Length: 146
Image (cartoon, rainbow, N blue to C red; front, side, top):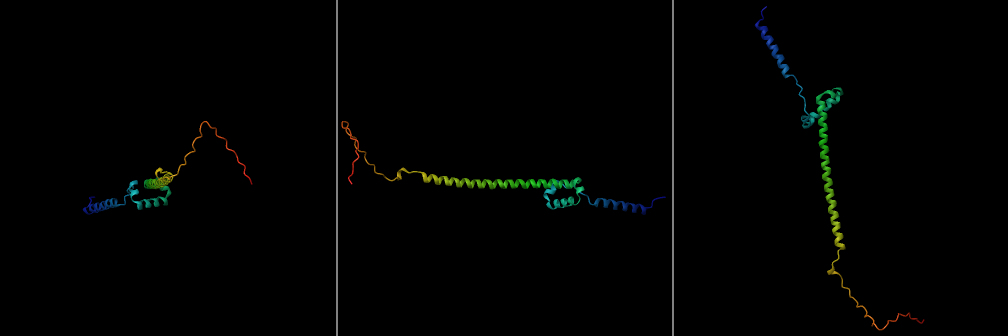
């Protein structure tokens, strides 16, 4: 039985339609960790999907990539937080150092003695020494009359 031209055209149309459907079908493109880190909305969607089906979450590559992306994002924010804390510590330490330096300078200014601005004190001459030949009599306590 010979194949008619109409049946051959119909088979070609059906084949083309199937090929078009296969080509236009939803292809699941695997999401990379970098893609998920850049697109937070997609990351949230994948995490929600993985949370709904825990058995799939262990084996699905998208779920594994999403968990890795979350870990990397968390470590990024941790390092940013550490850097912020280090900057704050350095700023506080510098302020403390400056205040202690000011206090030290004030203390030095208080205790410093300027010899050119001291008050003048008269100096009494010491009594002349006794002559060598004479013995000095010891001081005698005097009696007082009442």
